[in-house]
Length: 342
Image 1: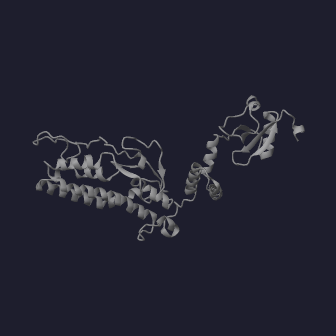
Image 2: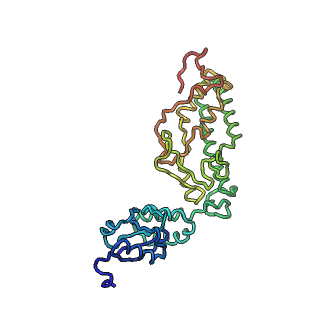
Image 3: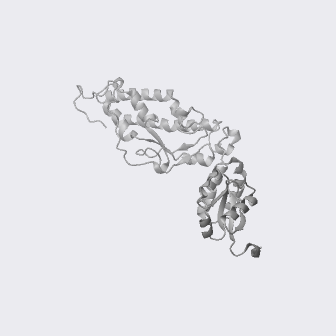
């Protein structure tokens, strides 16, 4: 065979963009390579072209002659494109038809793998391939519900409860501030205010819908499939690391999601509650804009969902809007003397 091909024949590995199988082909020039590759892969020659597997660079005759032996190439039909290794990653992530084969392949590789880094990659791949995010009811994904109270029959119901529990805990912190109030009159006004906030929160069902994928899009923080995306730290517009998670997919993801935070941009303990307390030092509860404090404490207007590594523990240095603290508007000094607002 080698004598027929001659010493000038260059051996390469060729494949199509739709198949991982590689074929050995040898040719003296690019025209011959195209002809042989199309015959081997049974693809039309009209408009066909060849590129490097690694980065998608299109071959020219001059470039072909400089290639090392056994370079990996991709044969493309008219209008097809190849983005290098990225194209294979895209094919790996998108096709449901390959899921079962990928799972078996990953399990086989994992069983013999010794590198901690590669084991982590394979484990994460399996976790995502084997997810059951489409399953909603307990009977269809019993493992997801391990450790979850039996009264919850669906994933969405539990996630809604989980979110509501987080937000209800903020109300407990508002209530706890009562202990720091010195005067009886101010304490009484504060109790009226906290009662009003509690009623508003109860009416909104604790805003548990933020984690419920069955809610309308405007009322939830996730996609319809249950994917959540980190919104970045309080000082960022978006997450720079593109953190995403689907707690509906597996028990492990559900547990990991519990480490994500609903973070107050304007801080609850350092700013919002002190501002409310200061407002009631010289105003009646009915003069305070309850709706503003409700939104700052319990809604997406001031809450950001963040991955734990994006949760900044430092002081946020953001202040309440003094023009919204009172129902009557921003005239906070009239008859009261100058005050400093947080």
